[in-house]
Length: 183
Image (cartoon, rainbow, N blue to C red; front, side, top):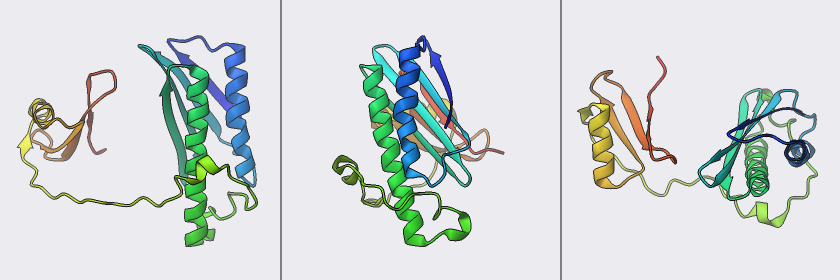
């Protein structure tokens, strides 16, 4: 694997770089051939939280995980566990649907022994509730007010400026984000 490791508000020491490469490099055992794409790793510090974000692009698939903890090494361990669960889910999905034409089937090794703590997330994603509601046209500021009024961390609305469905959400830093479709 080729790594692109960068730090935001943190110096990436040689020890930290080696730990990231060692831990994330272990993911190679899940693949028939090691990923040829560049693994992007961003280490950052926000307030008292140490954050790690990892992105591994594959043809037709993207593995991405982010974790925060009080210790950077713990964050790295958590993000690797999350990536392993994602790989297992993709492998299960690929094997179940026999997606040989998309190339997923031959992407993962068949004979990997998985640690027990990774098997607990083996369930498929299950929708347990569906909500339907009418989207009221409003501007972004009104959507943020509505979101705060109902006490949710996100709010779906019809943007009166663009006439498209948008989502506002509360970020971890206490500010707000807007998701809108690409044009």
